[in-house]
Length: 489
Ligand code: ADQ
Image (tube, rainbow, N blue to C red; front, side, top):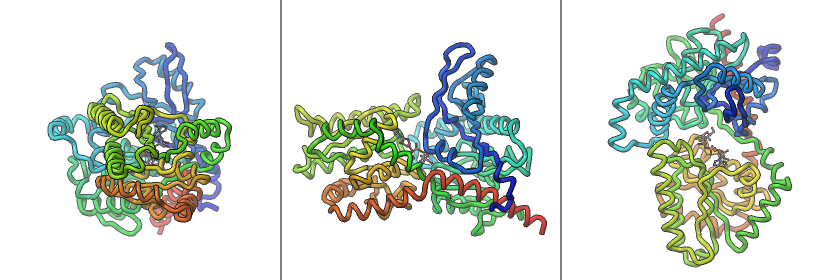
């Protein structure tokens, strides 16, 4: 039983994230159609037992008029979602600017091109002001819906200011914050002009969570080195108040994938794919088209492999599925053309009249098609330059119980810490090493593949998204109870 017994059994969870797990399309002045996205976070939170979850976030659309806002609010309420309305200027400065142009590259150790760095430095103050304003707008909506005893769980780098905004209004609110990206070394974080203000805002939370122990350690070091606070095994202490800091590695809803494999839709896709690629080994990459995913590096490594292994040229195919994201940002447009150019060159070089070595798709696949692809794959290639965790590697393992394929995994993905023993770990910057690992995977014995797969499958099916969410929420409840006990003593 939980320390706060009865309260926990009826507890409500307010999940606050930049984006709601729905996409909204306007059909008329007061009419909206909504599609719920079934990502890992959604199933994770639906699976938290004894907690009723509500979502608070931006619906991803600009709704300047009141009738439209009211109609959308009503439609979202049926999906347990509460909207935060952000206007275009705020979205531009807060979301495109501070979040995606400053924090995202910084947290993934990616430098900006020189001219952009200077431009970013110039508009830094206005973007940071918009960031704080947007976080305050999220806090206002949380406050309107908060009831005593609720747990408030803030997500990701978009909302680092939120814990402070919430606690200023109500210091008894139970507030947790979780970061889905890496937290970089303190030497990187200290280059950020608003470094201390951001850290202090996060420290207002009761519990701060990261995917890995390393990210948690980097965060604690940033607090101690940049702000002179005290780091303890439990977290960070500031003037006698402890903020608990810990690692909570996320997982996936593995049952959803395992059950889907039995469905006729997936079985039909599998049959088609097997016929299509008969006689060839299938290698797979599934990524959002983002700099952090190391897609050009992956394709260049594949080229090197083909260059050095003539035998395999017509016996292996790389399927690279890349969903475009942030398509209005020039850097992302450049990345798309770069990938297209490399793929075109390699297909021109190694293709024949009837086959090409790389099939590249710029689009998202539906869940069943994705499961089928994972199931027919012999080698998954995850070459992120940095990645908080990387759930694609988990999804691949969940769908591989029949085939027992090999996972080639970047050592810079959080998943390297959990699936490292079963995968072949690589440095994605070293394309010679990645090319060699493709050869190793293709030649790996069935026994070795079996051993590695079973190790990873056990991990993926026991460290699920539901377990992740449950552990975080229960730890947050315990942390608050312990803090109250300390104060009473
Ligand atoms: P992402 O950077 O989005 O997430 P990841 O964890 O791999 O990265 O999740 C991507 C999700 O999108 C997966 O569920 C995958 O199936 C889906 N997806 C990707 N490409 C797709 C395609 N072409 N078609 C259909 N679906 C596709 C951020 C962090 C990660 C962290 C997660 C969760 O960057 O490091 O693991 O949050 O915390």
